[in-house]
Image (cartoon, rainbow, N blue to C red; front, side):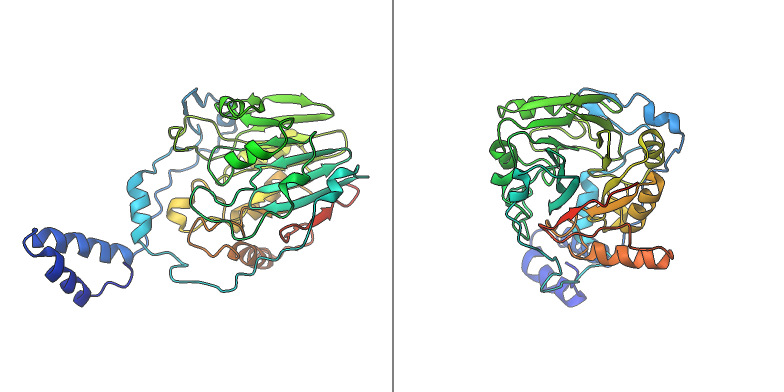
Length: 367
């Protein structure tokens, strides 16, 4: 629709409008043509930075919300997105710059002397800390409902050990994958936000369901569900009928924070105060354009870098890029933009580990 010209409109009028209400078709096509040349205004509601709202009531089973910021997106916005322009309209890169390294996952079969992290792709990390392996938003499937995977997973699904556990941030298809749940070992324990336990259990798997700020003990680990700014929906689950969250996963030696999907909010500062010092912060940096519709629910690289500082974390591990084409920016653009953001801020990339898919990184000792 972005290339509609007056002559094109007239041709459509002549072939499709005849006898069918020419005025209606003209107004419809003119609206789409104008919409395709414009960038809609960002109408994201204002953030209320009161820290007490992070602990406030946030809904009930079947109807959850973010107390600090209202929600005003609709299916009309999705339609406007399909016909409007953004900063990346028309941009295509071939080949895409998404590095990959071979990794058969064999290191998971032996005890890790300290701790190492492997990027499987998108929001999936495999953290190997001492004798344990845990996964974040495990996704080894070929698609996220419709978008196809750009690269195979960084390690084979079969390499994940039987005693692994997993944390799930919410029910969107790029974060919760039925194929993965059904094919990881049945002994994997799944930590999920409120409302997702039954979905996991129906697949014959063990689920531990938590609300924001609740903690469960799993062996030597404390697994805490924390608030983030997002939403939820699947074909078989109504909008916001299940909760969304981030996770703090900690043992006596190290503390990990996994944000899942989130927009920028004051909760990062509170999480850093409550659980710090945080050693590793796994933060999303992709799926942020167009800003007017993604601002509420997805960090852009500037906001992710700020969140890293709010958390006062030692290391930042960017994710949510390079795997599924979800929004307007090319899937290899987020780390490019992050590098520009850090440079413009006068910062350093030293504490930021940008992975290749399949890359294994040993966390340096010391805090």
